Length: 426
Image 1 (cartoon, rainbow, N blue to C red):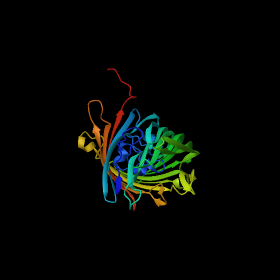
Image 2 (image 1 turned 90 degrees about the horizontal axis):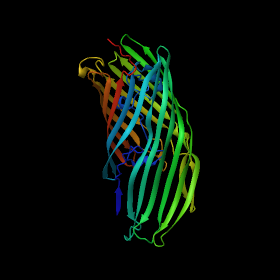
Image 3 (image 1 turned 45 degrees about the vertical axis):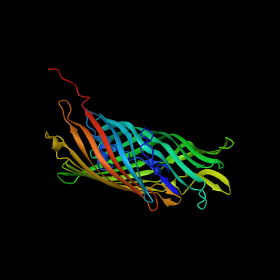
Image 4 (image 1 turned 135 degrees about the horizontal axis):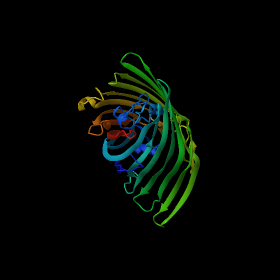
């Protein structure tokens, strides 16, 4: 008998925006860290500098924010995930409050932004069972895997345009979070001991992001923007703690062996470059490439050799991650009085390699496509706010591993209010 249960619990809280078994590896599933308008274009944005959207993918873009306005953007998502392994299929649902960001113009050519965004998500709950002895089907074992948590990022940043066409910027972030994971090996016969390994870690650290953008007009109606970002890597501090707990149901006793690794986790050095082509402020097409140098980092690893357990940092678990994003947006005229001519239509696609290995085998590659709309909110006192809605399909797959198909709906509301205008009395 072999039973595979891939049903994941609904973890719709601030700590978990996923129900993927792959979130048990590394620091969890990496967030796209995109807002509503980026998501419709599947995360592209390093070369985008919108006057009415907060683009925290590249802090240099803050220099382009409108004067006399305050922009507030918040988003949520809901998703259905289909898992498949060895012909067994399961579905799981979850939702998440994604991000909240704000931006405004401080002075001429100087913009500012702040907000809270996710960095990683951990959330899984599944088990597998089989007979202890295939020829004697009397006792079976069950391995249960559970984990929850993730890292979050609160940032404040500024973007400055010192000369026409060139802008630079930086974000400084407080990075925090924790995770709890456990693996339990139990048996249907109380004669066998139950073994549990628990993993815990808590992180409080910082992150720095630097960005630059340069825009050049190439024809009367065409502009090209080149964007670049850099995030220096560093140790995140904190310890990784593990306990091995052996429980005896017959004697109602248990033994615990503790392990701990100091300074166990690190943030990798990250690079990004992007290109955006703008035609008449109607067509905006972008292409991004990002590289995360995870391969240089060690990972807390449990090993059992000669009946001796060890828990230490090991190389070879992480690997460098590359991601390509392509996206486009079309809007006939964002200031036109006709509603349909102000709607923003978006499409995007991306491809990403994994940032970890499992038993020496590369993790799943990610392929994703998206489509969405920026719907103007028009009334007597507001004509610049937007409702951003997008749908996204994500496929995670690798030979011999669980296949995931994720169908996600993203909803973001961007308030763009003229808070800094002075009223005149007639």
